[in-house]
Structure formats: structure tokens, C-alpha cells
Image (tube, rainbow, N blue to C red; front, side, top):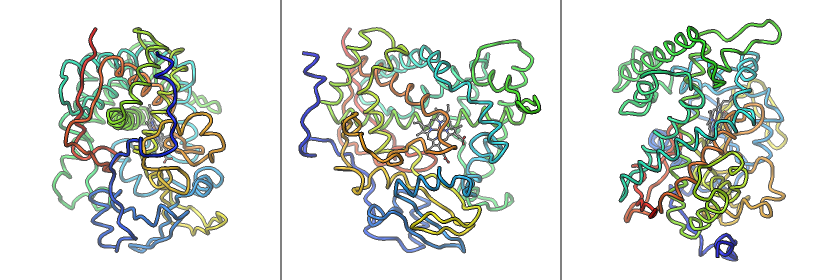
Length: 464
Ligand code: HEM
């Protein structure tokens, strides 16, 4: 019986597949004014239908050259082959620097290499396997909260809460007392730290606007809490092997210099920020997709029971949850949490079909890449089997890159995949999930791709 459920259905047509609604693209490129309005409301609305058929497109606005890149080889050229010709973009620096300072996400050159080396041991295979118990504990607590709520629940806030707990437990285990709670509240309670449009445009700080001074005071409070956590940890003799411990122990091989307190604060905030919201939105969309594809949900349940029985998720079990990985990948393709990777050309560079002038803003558009009819069959349909080994064979290397690529590839990619699989295998065994009638969430891109207006879903706890 179980083997039956695990069997893959014949997919000769897309008719049987669930196709989630998404933002309807305007038929052709928007005028500058409409583009600005769309960018402010939801940048996904500024992506026109023509772009899905193009490898790249140039534009010019506000005195700057822009290049949208949507083709695997060209994106590979920007992120990997000519990575040294492209730096972090100004917009990205403005979005992130006030909160995460000069942490790993933002720094460049030798400073970046030093910080990446310092953080790397916390993300090695063995270190990640040791974190599985913490992933499983947080997933079980989250499943219990959802079952207790049952009925129609907006799952998005729960996903944020649960993934934040994971980051705190695994990367910053050394936090003690009330600190995680306070930090958590500051980040995701009623006080989410997000830059205002004026901050993103680089407007001078004295220009007043709604939300601007609040944003600044929240950033100050957040940084102060992180600084206290570093000081407390320096005074303690705790050895937990968590990320903060790894960063504190790191020494530059050339001069034995460690990271400064400022760098530690910047990186604590980098990892909290980069490490929880992306995974939270991935889980939110995954639950939505699975709710609308009962046959996929049945296959997930069968795989989870076959591999794990009724027990907690283990590191060995995770390796065997291969259909779970396909489902998470398909969710990352359709609702890529970070759909734009931004760079600025530092010098003139020849990418073959396109010459890029120094100063050009380059947008690697993963939303288009992952939904392009040039690269995918039935690109809007939810079809986890497209990530089966057979159907993945021969896929171009940069056709699917939710975690980026090249030297700046996401350091937390494996962490995120292990975490997402743990949650999914825990959820499907704890409850069935169904769509809430009338709800049709659309993606909106702000710092990540989240559902506009939340994600109401019906949770039905499983008996026993
Ligand atoms: C589904 C979850 C995630 C997605 C989709 C994602 C996506 C990305 C992408 C696309 C980049 C590259 C950005 C660029 O090249 O400009 C990136 C970088 C980064 N990510 Fe993630 N990420 C995820 C989870 C995580 C987690 C769990 C952590 C940490 C625990 C993390 C930490 C970072 C850091 C520190 C960087 C900067 C790396 C560097 O520049 O050296 N991410 N992420």
C-alpha cells in the first residue's frame, strides 16, 4: 500500500498539477513612472511578460545603466566566471548596512574572505548534523502550536517564530536568560526592522518621513542587545560550538587576529536576519503548495512514515527524505525567497553576448530564471517531480539557484534545506493541511517573497 502512494504518477499533461496564482505580468515593459510605482508596491509587478523570453535586457534611469540578466550562462558569468568584476550593489548596501553593519552579507574583498573563513566551520557537514536535534525540537513545538490552534490559521507568523527559534538555538545557543525573547520580539513581534523607501533611496537622514525615526531607533535597540550578548559571552567560559563560539574562536591564519566586537555584533545580526525570514517564507509557501496538492501531501506522509516511523527527525533520516527535498526545491523555484541578486560592475567587462560598462547595476532575476518557458516545462505548475534525479539530469548549472552561486553563494544553504525538510516531515505527520476557502495569496517581494496578506490555511490534526 505504502509503495503505491510513493509511486510517481504519470505526468503526460500539466492539467492534473496545481498551478498557484501569481502576480500577472504587464504585457510589455512599463514606463519609468509606472515602473517606480510598481517597484514601490511590489517589484514583482514590474516584471513584464517579454522579459520571460529574453536572456537579458538593458535600461537606463536616473542617470544609471541597468542590466537585467535572466539566462543561466549569463548569470553564471556575473556570479562566478567574472565574480571579481562585480561588487555589492548600492541599493543592497543601503537596505542592509544600517542593521547588519559590515557583516558577512555586506563586506567585500579581503574583509569578506576573513569573515567567511571564520564562519565556515559552523556550517560544515558534521556541525550541521549535530544541529538536527535542535531542528527537530523546534519543529515539534511548532507542530504542537499549530495543532492546538487548528481550524483556519495564518501560518506565516508561526513560521517566522519557529525559524527564529532555530537560529537562536543553533547559531546563538550561548544566549542566556531573557535575551533571545527580547531580541525575538524586537525582530518579529510587532516591531519588524525594515528600511523605509527613503532609506533605500539613500536620502539624507534629516529628511522626515513616516516610520523613519522609528526604524532608526529600532535598529539602535537591536544593535545594543546584540552588543550585550557578545559582552556576556566574552565574560563566560561556555563552549557550545555554536556560530557565536566559532566566530569568537576564529583567528586569522596570517596574523592570529580575531574578529572585533563590532564585527561580532554585525554578524550576529546578519545571521539572525539572513537565517530566519528566508526559511520562514519557504516553509509558508511549501505548506500552501502542499495544501493544494493532496497527492503530493500523501507522498510526503508516506515517505516520512517510511523513513522515520513515528520518531523524531534524525540526521540519517534527513538524507533519505528525497521527495521532501524535491518538494522544497519546487517551492524555492516557484516562490524564490530572494528573487533578485544585485551587483554593480566595478569595471568594464565583456560577458560575450553583452558588454557591461563600469557602474552598471546588474539584476540577476531569479524569479524570471525559475519561471522561464525557455528553461522549464509548464513553468507555473507545482511539479516536484521535475527535481527527480532523472528529470534533473542535464539541467544547466545556473538554471536553478535559489541560494545564489559563485563565491558569495549562501553559506546557510544546507542548513536551510535540512531545516525545511525537518519541519515538513514533522508537520505532515502531525496534521493534514488544506486550503482555506476563498484565500488566494499572491507573492509580494519586500526583503523576501512573502504572501501578500498572510497565509490562511486549514490545519487538521491527525488522530493519535
Ligand atoms: C531558504 C532559505 C535561504 C535562501 C533562499 C537564501 C538565499 C541566499 C542568497 C540568494 C544569497 C546570495 C546573495 C548574493 O549573492 O548577493 C545568500 C547569502 C547569504 N545567506 Fe542565505 N538563504 C537562505 C537561508 C540562509 C540561512 C539559514 C543562513 C544562515 C543561517 C543564511 C545566511 C546567508 C549569508 C550570511 C549570506 C551571505 C554570504 C556571503 O556573502 O558570503 N541564509 N542567501
